[in-house]
Image (cartoon, rainbow, N blue to C red; front, side, top):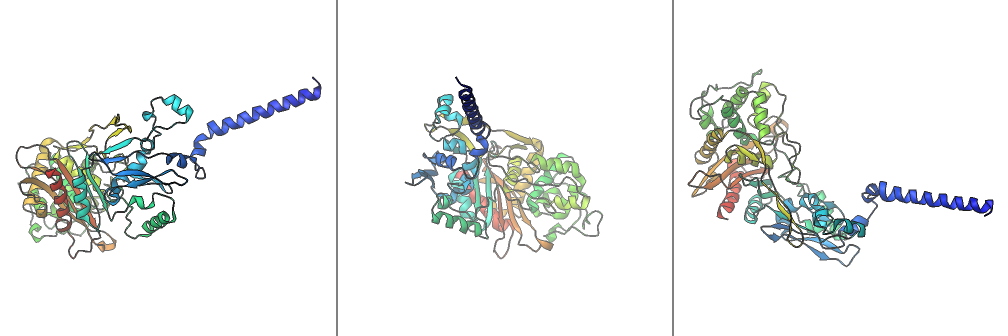
Amino acid sequence: MSLTGRRAGTFCLLLIVALCAQATRVQVFRAEELNHNGANQRPVIERYSQPRGDILVGGETVTGSEATGGRFDYKRTYTDGPLFAAVTGYSSQTYGNTQLEGTEDALLSGTDGRLADFAVWDAVARRRSPGGNVRTTVDRAAQEAAVRGLGRQRGAVVAIEPATGRILALASTPTYDPGSFAGTSPADQEAWNRLQADADQPMLNRALRQTYPPGSAFKVVTAAAALESGVVVDIEAPTDAPYPYVLPGTTVPLVNDSPACDEPGQSLDTAMTLSCNSVLGYLGVRVGLARMVATAEAFGFNEPRLDTPVRAARSVFDTRMDEAQLALSSIGQYDTAATPLVMAMVAAGAANNGTVMRPQLVDGLTGSDGATVQSMRPEVFRQAMSPGTAAQVRRLMIDAVENGTGRAARIAGAVVGGKTGTAEHGVDNSGTPYAWFIGWAGPAGPDAVPPVAVAVVIADSDAAEVTGGGLAAPVARAVMQAVLAG
């Protein structure tokens, strides 16, 4: 071969090597980057090339898929979309996935390796399995009661089975229809834009992603801390709480909403029944910052990774405060802020003998044929207090419902315990208060763990009188009744 021919051959070989190197770089080393590039439509086209797996409530599907005849073969549909929007989230060909549609996307879309019969061969052949299904823990009757009770008010409900952590209801209102923007049409875009511009923020999941000052509902945590630390031994005995109670280091008294609280030495039982700020603020300072923080964190405050599997916003109880700030925080004010999820965990922990279970929204994952992919098991989150302390806290909560501010939560033939809260907020507390109720209910009779605990918050209501007992307690009662009747 001539010198020229050898040079040409060498040059061609170098071109082939360079081409192979470039192909390897693109297909192997940059594959992940290119797959997630916003300009790459192939993953979206592939995701919607087959029907999506379903999300189930009580064994019945609340989602579906329909053929489009367009660029994307199938789009997501929802049965009773507004009822379950806070649970399912949305799956949109234009705007992506949220909530369970997002956290379980691999299973629902069929890309989860656990669905493949022959995982290696399927990967080589780029063959997808049919989408799997997600079984939720939600109780339809409880969910319907929650959404119906909230109506058009801005608010949220979380109901939990205390013994397991199973989430029975997860509602956020105003709600929205996730199917209204599941496709790519101008109508889908208009629906999305309309929801984004809505001042009521219907797409905000207030049950998981919004925090509120819990107000007097937080007093359940303070009572637990006072009893567990030995600051209070007998819930019916007089305390040494003074009246007026002047916030430490200030000249400002901690005022009460009820004149019946304006006496020194009120017992913890009386203070919880009447919701006395001065007593619970004083007891929080007596407990001390370290023990108040530890108790709050045992219930879920300050937890950055509280996944249901959808991640909840971080509820806050400050770890650095002076005593005046601690007194205010101990009655659910100052910087204390909680999601309805964590406040439901507070009620559930009291109901479950002091054990707080990790909240779960998913009961199990299956293939399209119903074969189990993964089953969820109850998991202890933390031990917030001893069983003996929990029994005393339950007694306090029962008295608050039977004789105090929570009377609207009473259910005939059942034992109900709870705590109301009316939390001030805004500049100089000028905002409309947040109305809270947290509680639990069980059948009268043997001292078993109640089957339901609930947290309700109603924000910015237009009611003439905004109180936890007047607005939130009736909603909680309806949800708890639905569970007890199931």
